Amino acid sequence: MVDLIVIGAGPSGLTAALYASRAGASVLVLDGGAPGGKLNNTAEIENYPGVIKKGPELAYAMYEQCLSFGAKYEYGEVTSIEVLDDHKVVHAGDKAYECQYVFIATGTKERVMGVPNEAEMTGRGVSYCAVCDGPFFKNKEVCVIGGGNSAIEEAIYLADIVKKVHIVVRRDVLRADQYLADKINTKDNIEMHYLKKPHAVIVENNKVAGLEVSDSNTNELSVIEVQGIFPFIGLDPMTDFVKNLGIVNERGYIEVDRNQETKVSGIFAGGDVTDKALRQVVTATNDGAIAGQYIASLMK
Image (cartoon, rainbow, N blue to C red):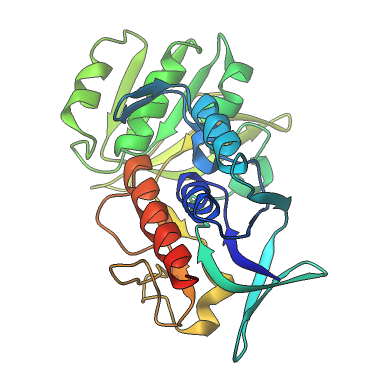
């Protein structure tokens, strides 16, 4: 039995664990991946006040600081939360952990294109992490799908590694912030493809050979010859394991109050998994700080 179990070791979860453990709570952090969450897939953090670091560096610093006040970390993929009269039971594989409070910070997962050959070629030319896999495509041409901030950030990062980056946007304008759009113009090896949608991954000799796209207006098909494809077309909350608790909305995001508490007493949530307007590192840490401090106050 511990006071608090944090599910997810991204910025929000690590901050909640830091604040709660620093205030004297016993804390266990569970995550099925590397501590830091999406920070590990981010090349540069430029908008976290006072800090300019590579994503993995900031992730490790947060992790070390979190553990310095006594929080424990274990690898575990949480499958369900059991709500009992006087405590909660968190199930992860064949293990069960008991606690008084739960903080959910599982974040989001990348949305897939849903086109032929995508699943088969994932990890073999189709990637959802430019920082992870970009170096494999040195001196090759790649395609980035999407017109939002994430897509443009990844395209700019890839442009410094690969021979050429093709950006496929289904609309005739970008959704990304203007300063990112302006950065594209500083890269000679980025080519824009507006009003185009992914239609199929082209495979030759068991390798990605291109992306077939359809025109958003005419549905006419054409092929962009690339060796790598990086979709960044949106995110979905990782909340399947708590949908039975009645704490998520119609889009799958968790709803919380001013203290980051859900409709179920003693279960809190923060970060990208919650229903909010801005999903950034700074807002994730804000959620974790509020919840961690509030949970600690409940035990006094």
